Length: 287
Image (cartoon, rainbow, N blue to C red; front, side, top):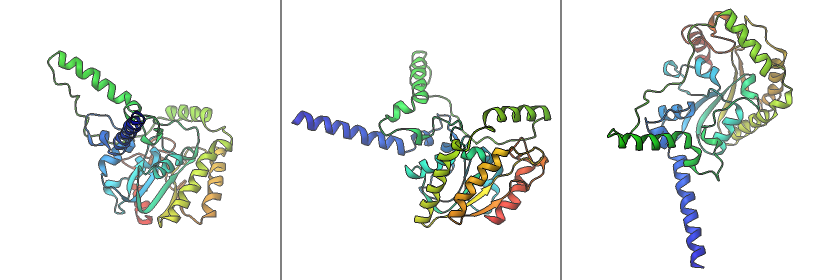
């Protein structure tokens, strides 16, 4: 019986330690690791509750300039952000939203099979140890550290500060833009609407959560480069999402066709020098 109790105690202790590592932001607080977009946001905003949050994918990163905003929203743009990511963050308590949530939507924010960053912490299953989940970042430091000690050098890796999310300057050439559209057409533009249903369900869940927790939720349809014809799929995906938004009477701002082509780096990312300021003129007043 004592052996059983001892084994249970060890397992519980291991679980507690693993939960502590998962939620204490060890990597976020250290400058010895290359951080993902979510960790960069956490590093910039270490507070427990983010009162106002603007979530989206990389188009939100490059469009919403929180440092020069008067509205006070945290830029929770993720390079590979989809609505299921937002729901997982909320459900697993990796973020706590205070009073306001704005969701920047486009077709990729709703695509179920969009590429993701495997280091996002909500991808960690409860049964997977934190050290194993972060093995690609921990193990090189350990092995390199031993090598450096043997050479008489400091075992600590270099500092990776400051770290910022990627924004876009200038604009793609017409040839590069055409190649990009061809690639997108092959990967995304011929998908059935069934490939967007998990994110539609997550959108519904996020809105319901906000309603239950007295959080105002709004949606922005993010800009599309009006110099490029919009594929039919994008309109179909938007119509599907608007059914969810109308069901809950969610306030929306349509900026999809409001900016001229010279504001863009490519199909949806704004040029940070010219497009972002124009976007901010519109969005800050609305926010």
